[in-house]
Image (cartoon, rainbow, N blue to C red):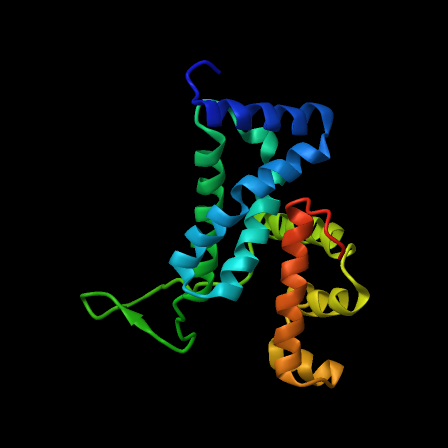
Length: 199
């Protein structure tokens, strides 16, 4: 611990409190310290405020789920940003998956037909487990939202519906969907950061 900076030592104390004592305030303090820096880092990569906020919430949830894997060999902030960057890379990779036509026929340099791989969009077993864990964490947080926001968030993040689909399902204008999802995300951030403001 002596090789860590004051900031690193502070974070390590909070991590130990969170893990050993299950101290909710320690989790909240870590969230307050790193929520905004994570958001700005992710925003630079995706250039979309809404996506950056979503990724921030998910990255924090993933990091706290894996908190027991952190070791003070590196500072907590380095580890946390690595988790967030990897999560962002996964997101970007998923959004840019190459598509190979199943009707394509591949030939080698001799003109003979050869086998080829088709990239599947299906999640691998470990990815499915990771996704279910992430959803479980988000569900706990979402249950603290006001009912009208709770329903929107569930449709958007658990059922993965588009804004248009939500608008149609709830029979409300798409502008209202976007505005209420924005407010619900702000509430989620307050919950994540341990804000005591009224929700």
